[in-house]
Image 1: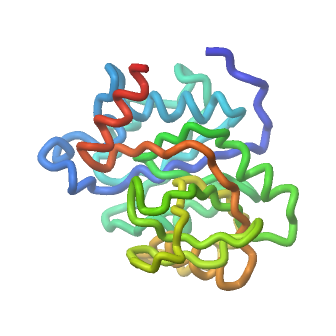
Image 2: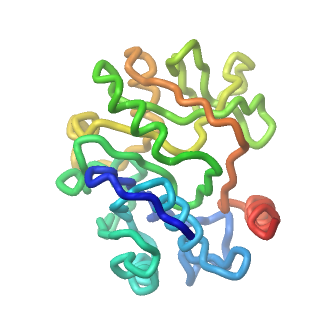
Image 3: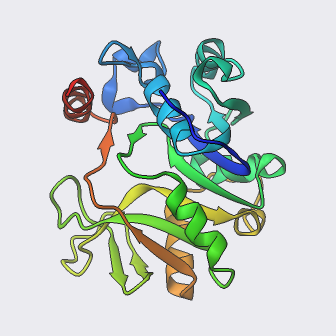
Length: 239
């Protein structure tokens, strides 16, 4: 794979600390990130794709069975990217809580994505958009889902996310969180340390404040959080 030159400050954070209960019993002894997909551990596919978009550094936030991820990925050199780690500790902190715990390792602007997402788009695009708009606190990748691949949770107007509400059946929410968002470090610094907290709370707050931009992805997302998602991704990767 040909990898373009890296930007020194281009950092991606992958949230890979969940329990993956929907995939039990396979994930009782194997972290979801290491599930085999098209002949390779999922995380190898994911990190290579992130690296191909010009990222120089990935911070992996790990928890459940995280030592297995460390053993496989190491410092990331075999995948062409530098990898470091932040651990949740004995209690799960949620997606935003894990970022707050990793605050001292975050760049001033960074991209955050989920440890079960594989996104066929330019992972650098939301980060570059945020860096071009100093008035914004974040740029969230969104997809015009209309309830097709999962329950839509986002309303977009022009270049902004104007509402984010997970689990709502409101038809006005016709977009979905694509699974990647660029944020400023100060957004995470404002969160309480050590308290379980999901990123959805942050997304809702930024949308209400009018400081969350929207980057519209064109292709459907893939995820390995379910058996059907695993099958769909495997079919796509096998071409």
